[in-house]
Length: 153
Image 1 (cartoon, helix red, strand yellow):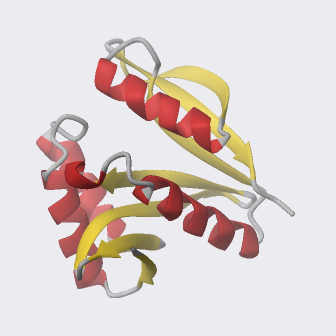
Image 2 (cartoon, helix red, strand yellow):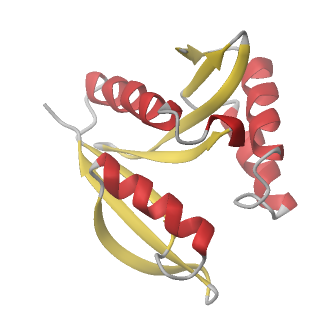
């Protein structure tokens, strides 16, 4: 597997669409999925490739002078549990730290609300993220869990 930082906007859009269209369990709302795809073109974008095709991607978004957010991440179902997400995260974390960011955050649905998102929560915790707070950011049925991680040097 090879991790690359993509810069071509069209390639970012193609890759994010391919991955997110196959992950409707997590990205089922068309409007939200399309927003993730369109915003990915202008964000730092890391992609994992295997056998010449994309296996997953991760985008970062600056949320403050010292903080970057893991804005969206997706790994094709046939590549789940093979380390793709960990490798993407490591590349993005290292890049963010090299650029001088001190913290990384990620938002997801609070643990215990949906089984699919419980898997996501456990993944972020296994990477070393820590719970910061739960916010009523999206709606009552989808409480937003905010995780943070110190990535400074």
